[in-house]
Image (tube, rainbow, N blue to C red; front, side, top):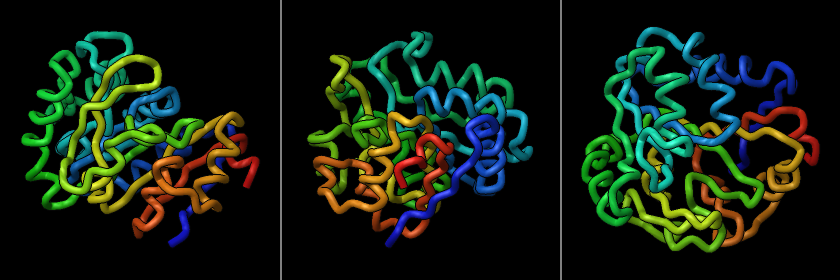
Length: 224
C-alpha cells in the first residue's frame, strides 16, 4: 500500500484543504478531529465550507492534553471556538483532560467503543516532525495496543495526555493527514518512502490502511 498525496499552494492551503475535507465528510460520521496549528488554520474555513449535515455528525478527538476544556492548550477549546460552536455541532465526545489520565482514557474508551465498532467515518490527523500522530510519539507504549482504543500517555513536552490508539485510528474509512511547513518535509519523505518500524516512525502505522491521503502544502512536500 502506498500513501496518496495531494499538494496545495502554501498561500491557499487552509481554504483548499477545508474544501477537500468538506467533500470527504461522511453522511453519518463519526468525524475525528485533530489538534495542532495546522488544524487551527483549517477549522475556521471548514466551518464556512462544510455541508449542513456536519452538524449531525458525532465528533471525536484524536488526542488531548491533560488540561481543563477552557485551557489554552486544549484541543477541544480550539475546535469549539473555530468549528464546533460556529456550526452548532452538539454530538461531541470530549476527552476529559481535567480528569486523571488513566480514568479519562477508560471513560473515553467506554464512550466511543460502539462508534469504533461500526467504524469511524473520517479521521483527521496531524503529524509532527518526529512523525507522531495523535499523541503517539516515537517509543510510545500506545503504539503497541491492539485492543485498547484510548490510552493515557506521557508527552515529550512533559505534559500528560490522551490518545486514540491504532485500533481506533485504523477503523476510520478515510484518513486525512494535514501537514504543513518545511520543518516536516524530511519526515513526510520518511513516512511515505521509508520502511522504518512504527516504534521509530509512528505515522508508518497508517501504511497498510486502504484510504490514507497526505494533504501537504508545497513546503511540506519539498523533499518528495
